[in-house]
Image 1: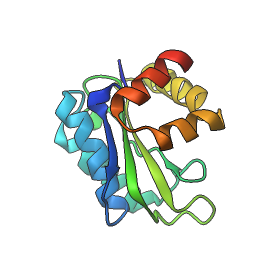
Image 2: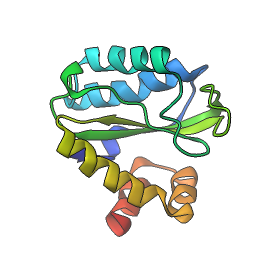
Image 3: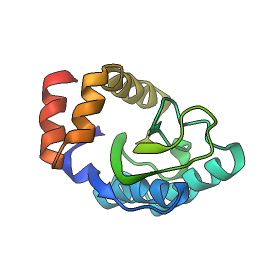
Image 4: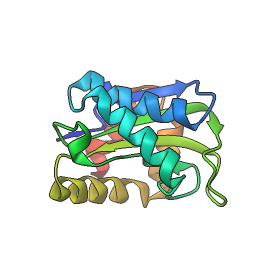
Length: 146
């Protein structure tokens, strides 16, 4: 399971729209070997078909698609946007933190969501992610919390 290791974190990424942000978060999964590029296409297709249902909290999006769309290892990446972008969610836009979730099974999906929920339920953790200077800073935070 790959969960927000420094190689899966991109800080102050400049995206012009939601699709660019999703693509960047997905590319981190691809670069790590946890997913195929087809998974990025599947996440984008899901967003286009279903809308911003995965914008789960103010300023936080969790794009994902089905495991059979190219995930080989359970993983979560993070793209912190330099400038928040609108995903089209009426209450939680604009989005600043994009966590791409790649699950290889439903049990992995639940495990990853639990870890992520545990992290994001504490407002101090969200502020620490917003303030982090490096991926290593976020890794250190995770060592203390998850």
